[in-house]
Figure (cartoon, rainbow, N blue to C red):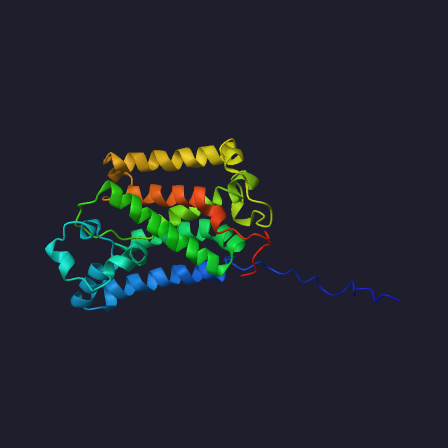
Length: 247
């Protein structure tokens, strides 16, 4: 005989965790916050300046070398198109990027897995730096922030999470289904609205009027470069077997 549950015992309900996000996403957010706290509050002025000089992306250092480019560490031009994502200007900057990383990184990490997620994020950062360089090749000023990588995650999520969720609860959208074709995404109302708002917002920043609605000196070119890369290039990082990643 099959044992019957005791009707006098209370029913135990399991509660979902407060933050149901993949570990790699939480680890990346923690890294961004720790680096920012260390640079702003714990390091000496000399160390903070060294971090900005050698981890930020400086477009002008790839052309006619300015004096500041000659005092960077050897090889800085090789890693800074990726490492600039680790630095942020202030608490609002790192906070907003961490929030969007949590929102859009969660479905992408579940689909790609930890290693592919990190590779995709770094590639998105590089793509953002590339477009920024093409638009500002002679600028000798540090570019910092994870916005290029976050924008790539937004573009990637637009290929599978947004179309299937209708915009509601897309962080819990199924990640084991085939990738949506680009043509299908571009005919999906939710994706179209999201893309339109993304580009309109960055167009506003490009005119200089966006400073009234957010922080100034926004590297909107890096946002666009990351997003376009994430949207068009997501399939290069996608799992061929289409299984859901357990993170």
